[in-house]
Amino acid sequence: MQFDSFSDFIAMGGYGFYVWLSFGTCALILLGILLSSLNDTKRILASVKQQADREQRIKQAKQEQKS
Amino acid sequence: MLRKHSYLQLFTAVCKKDLQLAFRQRAEIVNPLLFFLIVITLFPLAIGPEPGLLARMAPGIIWVAALLSTMLGLDKIFRDDFHDGSLEQLIASSYPLPLTVLAKVCAHWVITGLPLVLMTPLFALLLNLDSQSLVATVFTLLLGTPLLSFIGAIGAGLTVGLQKGGILMSLLVLPLYIPVLIFATSAIDTSSMSLDYSGQLAILGAMLVVAVMSAPIAISSALKVSVS
Amino acid sequence: MWKWLHPYAKADRAYQLCNTLLPYFAVITVVCMVVGWVWGLAYAPADYQQKDSYRIIFIHVPSAILSMGAYSSMAIAAIVALVWQLRNAELAVIAIAPVGACATAIALITGAAWGKPMWGAWWVWDARLTSELILLFLYLGVLSLYHAFEDKKAAGRAASILAIVGVINLPIIHFSVEWWNTLHQGASITKFNTEAIDPSMFWPLMVNIVAFAAFVGTVTLIRLKNEILQREKHRPWVRQLIKRG
Image (cartoon, rainbow over all chains, first blue to last red; front, side):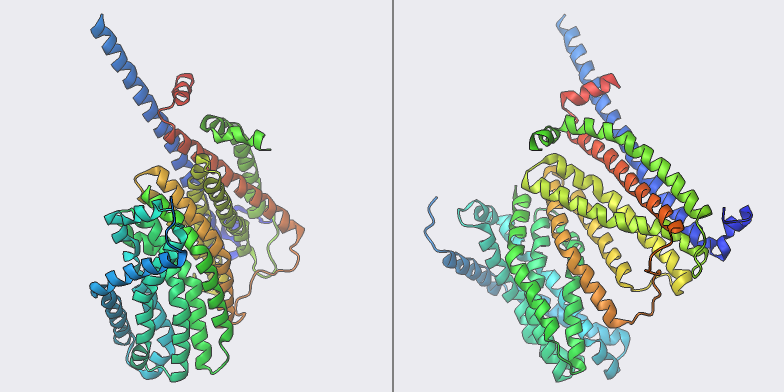
């Protein structure tokens, strides 16, 4: 461990603002694109499911009409 | 399908048609020039009329204005042909599309680039450019504007099928213009210090040769995507 | 090799491949990123010249490397898409582009945050910074061109053409900017010492590069899966996927 205390670690020898700024934005951007991609997956799967369910219902309704 | 005409005939025919169309509605030729002139007038008004400062900034101003005014005309290069369906005919014909595209880009340069080169002495006068730099400016524009037409036509081909392609095209094309801008302005800078600037011109020429060889292929595949 | 590779031109096989690869990439990302960041931030020794501000290198360099790596892989996918007419490769182009744009943005932001304490300015027209900025424009161009098309088939091909044009121009742009920079301003900028970097800093950097590469791979796989699903929405295999899941 390079730093004696936690406050030293945060201060980064006086460069804390710049170091944490860059690591913070990096983490934010990475998390942002990861979450939005995962969210897309969920959205697409939900829409596919919705479509499938609808087709199922239409099929059922048609069968009921026939009988 | 039979090919009744030689490639040279095809080239001249396409060129002639585009030039005739442009000369019939002269606004197409005059408007980019007027735009160029107005942009150049804006700069002294914005940064001050001091002759030394203007002469120092003139190469940059002239080249940025040239970039913007060729952008204006680019939108037109394939749009009319796309709308009246003749572009589809050209793609469907048995003649090689890259050659047709080459002819169209050449015609486009004669309409937009060449007048710009011819008018440069006037603009140089406005910006207090000395005669040495003026010669360099004319040379770089002579080599650079066809390069701009070729690179820009790729963007125009990609966006021709889109409703609002104009702004998108400038977004795609302007980053690709950067090397041309850098070498051209540096040639003019070097000449103003009365040094040899043939190196920069040679690089511009090399880029032009590469563009003439490869850009028509890229443009024609872009057009095929846009039309299909 | 073609026999082995060819089945992956089919969407469902490609989807399965993504699914099998995804956990490996995800595990590598998590492990390397945690190790790399903790090592880089807390355990690596401070630089004798730049003190602790140099720690930005542990994200700046990986993101810069990956911004270019992602562009070249995007261009390779684009060439494959145009030459062999593989639709999956087109989807890969579109899957990589946003990730690469993010890497480029991170490289620019961290570069600025590093530049402020070292050079005294947030932005310097340094050759590398400038060409990174132009790279971001190229990424944004590919993305906005793709989203401008209604017909996604044409959009994929148009974006592929632009990616290839961009990759041909990229070295020209890079060298011209570098040359322009040496012309306009001398070596006023003290770059990070190029002499052999100390092992105590080199290894955490390597771990971070691997972490970043694995992250780009993970997100690209997720996005590629999304694109495949989106396109194959109405195919039976997607329906079965829903039933099973």
